[in-house]
Amino acid sequence: MRAPLPFILGAAALAGCGPTDVTYSYFAITVDVDPRIEPEEVRPMIDTCPVVVETPRGEVGGDLHCVRNRIGDRYKFEFSTTLTSGSFKFTVLMKDRNLKVLARGESPQLGLVPGQTVPGSLTVSMAPGVGPDAGARAGAGDR
Image (tube, rainbow, N blue to C red):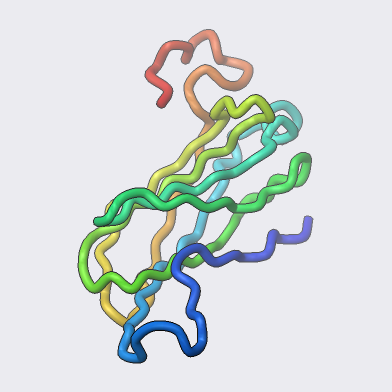
């Protein structure tokens, strides 16, 4: 299977706009999909993969651009910011076409290093109440 292309979330650098002394900082996030997410049962139902980034100034959204029936095992994306301090948390959700969360993963809080790239990773695992043993996990507090 061909790996999905990486994408970039965050502030766009526009030539000739704004101050010239702006410093960008980056996060390079690797998203691993738990192999226990059934390739024959659950993965074909995944339709959208939103990303939520908790920043010191609030939440920012994005998307992994996952493709239905072609969910990979690993995704990578970058997030850029002009903030100079603070911590960031990344959450990836995998939802079906009715926007029910089938799988989710969260990074730990990652501290920003001005002008540098901070690596991070998270693993997306099946949400409670999803899959063949859903009855055993039902009601386990899905957000």
